[in-house]
Length: 314
Image 1 (cartoon, rainbow, N blue to C red):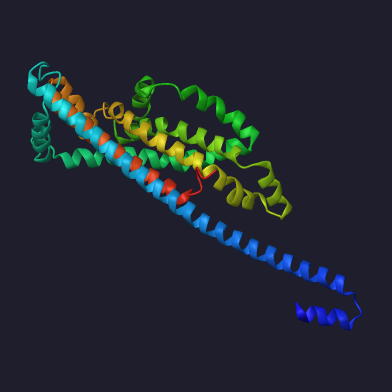
Image 2 (cartoon, rainbow, N blue to C red; image 1 turned 120 degrees about the horizontal axis):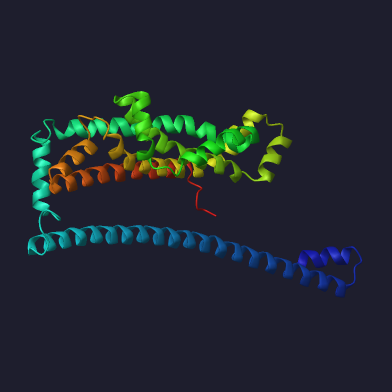
């Protein structure tokens, strides 16, 4: 400040004007310090906010896990209590002990003449094969329908016509056309899985905004680059949802597919048990199908978190 006065006096500036310059310099320094303090507070607040949000997310996940586990435990306790009370006949509601005994018998191969592993592996082969075929064909077809009006006009009526049909309605035609081998079983599950994948991929093409497409074109992107770097990433969340739905539909169609002269498979084992009123085996088969379906659903959700981590982030 004294240096500024000396400079001002040497330059012939009036003392009043020099004092005003001194005050302006002090105010500037004070404002810079205030801005610096506010910036530091904002950074600290941002860190605290992120920590609080992360802590809230972790606590929410833990609470949901506890609630889910408690509901499963309550279900089994209620099942055990009702079956043990004698209020319901074991024919209609087998006890958990009976279902467990049927499970051990199936593991040892004392049911249907084949170990449980053979039934599980054959059912997994049918469902996974049909699902993969549906994904390989359905995703490109859905993208093409979303990007090309001519392809949409050709394929959309067929997809929309057969989509609501139950698989049992066209099961006789599949058997007549393709016989009673594995081809008919896999084809039936494939047709059930295909429609959700196609419709999800077609809907996903609309997720890319016009601004994104126009920006890519302005930068000189080709049609292939536009599809790979703009449309496909935008459509990926919708495609993964369609794949999850298709996986569930595939498991629900398994029972109908294994009605076609199957010698092994979880669905075939359940159907045979129902003919002899073995409800313990039926319930065991339901739990096995539900367990594998839940595992595949968890795998699809994990894949979704890895491939589209931005989903749901606003």
